[in-house]
Amino acid sequence: MKGNTMSWVVTGVGAVVAGVGTMVGGTLGAGIIGFGLAHIVLGILDMFRSTVRQ
Image (cartoon, rainbow, N blue to C red):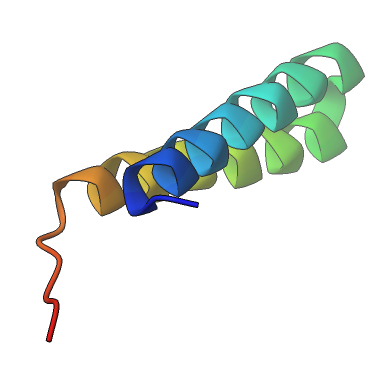
């Protein structure tokens, strides 16, 4: 799988997890939303990372 595709997958999974967190609600939901948002941020940052090939 290409690196950019993997970044999109991580971002998409983060969006799904954040959506599930909004449905759960409460303190547990807030933790799940934070976990999902962290994956979204990491996926987006990975898209801008330069790749070094040798």
